[in-house]
Amino acid sequence: MRFRVALLAGKLVNFLCRFFRYSGTSLPGGVALKICPQLIYKMAPAYDQVVAVTGTNGKTITANLIAHILRSSGLSVANNYEGANMIAGVATALIKDCTLNGRARSQVAVLEVDEGSVKKVFPAVQPDLVIVTNYFRDQLDRFCELDHNITLLRRVMTDLPSTRILLNADDPLVVAAGRDHSAVSYYGVDGKQSEDKTGDYDIREGKFCPDCGNSLHYHYYHYGQLGDYYCPGCTFRRPVPDFLACDIKVDDSPLDFTLTVRRWNSSSEGCSAADTVRLRAYIRGFYNVYNILAASSAAVILGVSEKAIQASLLDFAPATGRMEGFIYRGRPCTLALVKNPTGLNEVLKTILRKEGEKALIIAINDLAADGRDVSWLWDAGFEMLDNQSINKVICSGRRAGDVAVRLKYAGVPLSKLILEPGCRESLETLGLQGAEEYYVLVSYTSLNKYAKLLQKMGKDVVRGADQGMPSLS
Image 1 (cartoon, rainbow, N blue to C red):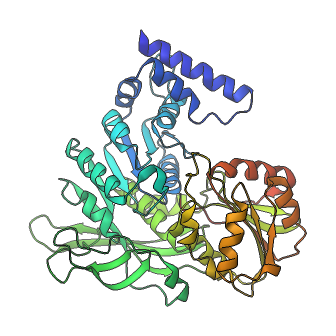
Image 2: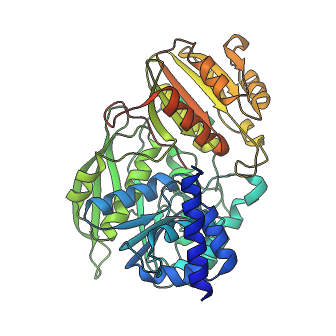
């Protein structure tokens, strides 16, 4: 009875949210869980398969890519596509998908799960497949140290022995978190991709071997601590990926690379066969190679053919604000969520790869969902913006002053900085700059405000060669 009441209450709250045009991505689930804390435990078994995506950056786009690929292959999918990834958001996604009797309408649930919420969500949904993207420092006031999240995942997975786990082989922290599990697959990027000097601003986590404590050595880095690493003091090293991205073309549109799927011979240590397919998607940024690779690898594990994956990627559209493309004042304008140093650095690198004059808004808030501690701004590579292609940088949000101070110390000329805390006012100012392209980089609580304003004041870009790049969230 409590389950039925909770489900009905959740659906009623969801209806009211839609009626009053409130986003409602977590509230229905939050209300329902207050009535029936076991709600997710009762709903999740109704799905043929449950897929969970966790990690610091790339969760939203990876989960949405998986859902898109599965839908394109003919499966019905429930997912929290807007990125509400704590337990209330997961509950909301399932409530929206089920009938009043609690019966799932979809065959598969693809769920993005906050790395700090795996302890509550994973036991409830009992995922068949878990994908771990990467681990970076993010919202230190909420998550404290990276070791906490790594230990949390390791402990949770010990109670899920039949769950398959797909790990980013290029991140030593991810490998350390999941390598002891009974069913592990790896994905990774082949070879050093560039000599880009903006890599000097990367934040390297996981510098020490998890087994013996020696400093890890690298043959090369991709970004952050992602790369080909090994320990000189013991056997810990980057695992050989089962799914490999190679021959990557980042600066072209669409982004494309070759996916190699290795088929291992169980009776030997060798690779018995390898299938390859060229994948393309209208998404910019090297970091998105990892997101596409993770999603494609997961789809292969779930039984989707490489050819079906190839066909589905070209019409994928990112979720709201995941570097969504607009036309604003006659210029291309791209909206990106930024929330930690590594994510921001990768967005800046991608912006600077584009030729032509650019103007930016950087809007940072410090509400609970953003993270109260904004000291991470000093770890990000804003020095990259001391660049001739940057026309103006408009500092906005509750912490506009902090952004301006950080940019000043990064060497950005004061003549290029404008302080304008308001959302609408900052967009109006941006439209006066006359640059060839506009970018709006925002923290979480500003995302929907800017997205709605850009939809009202501009127009969405049709998917294609001019589409923007999704964020790392």
